[in-house]
Amino acid sequence: MPYKPQHPCAHPGCAALTASRFCPAHTKQEARHYERYQRDPATRKRYGRSWAKVRAATA
Image 1 (cartoon, rainbow, N blue to C red):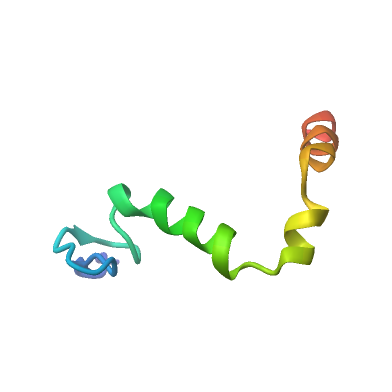
Image 2 (cartoon, helix red, strand yellow):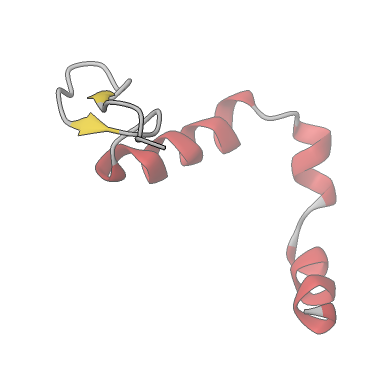
C-alpha cells in the first residue's frame, strides 16, 4: 500500500515536508511546549523522578 503524500510541518513558518504533524526539527520543541503549558499540572506531578525509577526497574 502506498504511503500518504507528505505535507508541510504544522509549526508556523516552517515549510519542511513531513509525514507526521511536525518535522524532526520541531517535534521535540512542540513536545516540550505541550508538557510545560498545556498538560494538566496534576498529571505532571504524578510522573516525576520516582515514576521513572519504577519504570526503569520493571523494564
